[in-house]
Length: 255
Image 1: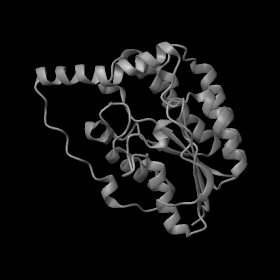
Image 2: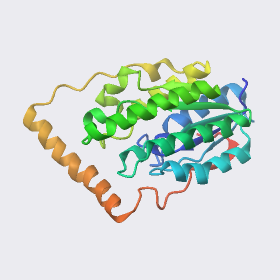
Image 3: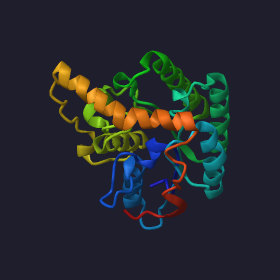
């Protein structure tokens, strides 16, 4: 095993929402990957997860990247920008220029670096005409940046299995437990490390919902998930305002 340490950087995608441990804390794909790498590397394998839900790209870079660099891990994952594309203030040129600079810094340590092209989450969300082109732009740029700096690209956008609603949680924005297992499998495959075959099994598609029932479900979703999100935007708050990193220190992995 060439990796003796792994640090995960990002937002809710990497924190692990909505894949809960029995105690209610979040597991997610990064914990699953860390567990597999630790099983190969032994008890000295170190893992830190600095990701915090709701974080915008500038905050991830300012708060998490310096901490990750200070730990000098063998492997880093960097996934950020997903929250930014949902904001009216989204500036693609500025974000992508900064993205390239951050990737250069992370690769400059000699660490292997995981980057992601995001799965297509917009198919079941409002605002698709505005946001989907932004996601496509970000995904294309991340692929080019990964190639330019020799990073390991995990292309979730090209995986049509993520169009299955069973891979997404009730809020339609975050992955379900099955979704996180599939991401973990894709990451381990990109690293050349085997994973539990069940992680890559395609869950059955939900049965088609009658039109009236589907619209009622949309209304419930809007009340439970969309309205609180809008309120946070209007008041300048974030779902991660009082959240700290779940694994802030590089230490042996314990599940």
